[in-house]
Amino acid sequence: MKHTPDEKLRDHFLGWQCRIRQIAMRQDEGRPSSGMRPKVFTRDGQELSGGVIVVLVPRDPEQSTTFFRFQAQRTHDPRQTYEKGLEYLQATHFQHPKSFSDEITALFGPKSALADRLLEAGECLLAFEQFSQSYRMFCKVRALDPQEPAFEATFWHNRLFNPNLPGEVAILGFQPDWRSAQADPAP
Image 1 (cartoon, rainbow, N blue to C red):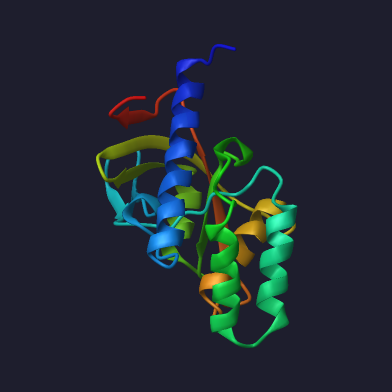
Image 2 (cartoon, rainbow, N blue to C red):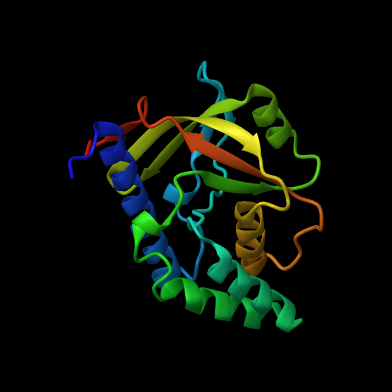
């Protein structure tokens, strides 16, 4: 089956994201690498953030969300929660790029001025860069409803790494416009 150029770029991006996440989980104890923290710009090029940590959410996140929630709730020891979560993410979680949605998510604290600005604009440009690869993509921005599986997946994923997350957070979804996205080098 022949892929369109934008499908090819999307698949290349998701594969790259999975690879850099495997490296971060296996070699850097899960610390977000530069490629997991895109710069955020307005459509006209004004930088809004030097880096927002984004999460890849599986198309069907029920299994991983259930695991992450269970680990976070089973003990009051944040180190144990982190270690079990990291072990899970180091295994096969990022092995199949096609199992992930191309809507990227990010968690923001309550009353985040950046989240408010992004929602007001309804779009932004995300600029990813790591090693010798970069991507620039315009994205539609939306607030995820707390009942959405992607909201739950993002919250519990972040909870593994930050046991002090407040109860009220904003989680935004970034849906790339693959037709206008650019990669350097191109796939």
